[in-house]
Length: 91
Image (tube, rainbow, N blue to C red):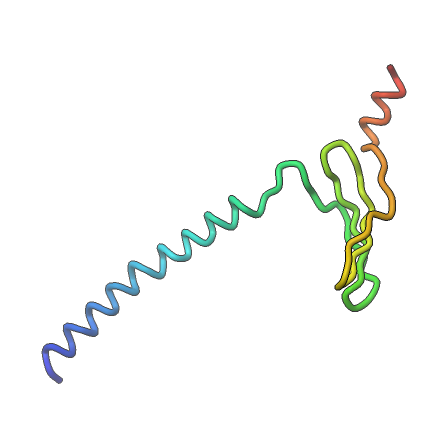
């Protein structure tokens, strides 16, 4: 083999050894940063078939029941969180 060809392969392997771990680290960091909603959490999911589901979502001080299809998302019901309702009843 030609020495120039071997040197080129060594450079490619070194570049991949640096770029691949950095890419994995960057995507994981970005995913953690973007994936966590501070005020939004999915509590339960009930699948009703293909592209249909019910979601119980906690957002700020409410629980929302959402009907989700491929075409739309509809708020079916909402209520205050149970611990907040108890605090209001005590006041």
